[in-house]
Image (cartoon, rainbow, N blue to C red; front, top):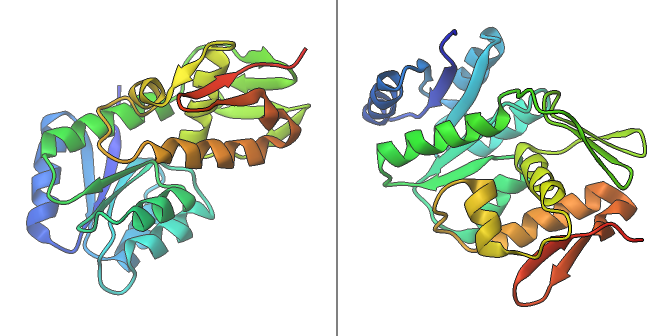
Length: 225
């Protein structure tokens, strides 16, 4: 099996080397960019990049601008690195389609674990499609149709919907959703889930009503009789 290719974008050479060395140790192929403009050039010239690790604060183009540009053409998983820990920044990242958000300083081992978790979720699988209440979710194709209409979901929204469908009728706490969908010990605010659920409901139209809020606990996916 070919090595998965990761693009590491950071204007600090020491940071790029640190991340690169840990990824190479885990058998990833790594390409680098030292600013936002170079990141876009590299991404569009190398067609098989499986994931991007993207710093926010960079010269020429910052990480938000790079993410916005790439998201116009690709759903490649993106992990954002930032020195800030402001909730507004984190929510902005998710709004732009960021899959994970890690504040500096961080443990390289944790970063690699999150890379592996994201890639496990986003790489194709052989599981069959799930069909519930007019919703057809195909994990292998990473595609969702509602009443035969394709719905455009981010990776995180797709995984969240997958988890809801797999646990139809089960009351799910926010903690349980975090542990299973985010697949690591999440240290941010559980309201991150509420933000994703709100966006998911909106994209699902009337079917979004299937995601019931359980006040003070979490959510339950239940198809109306």
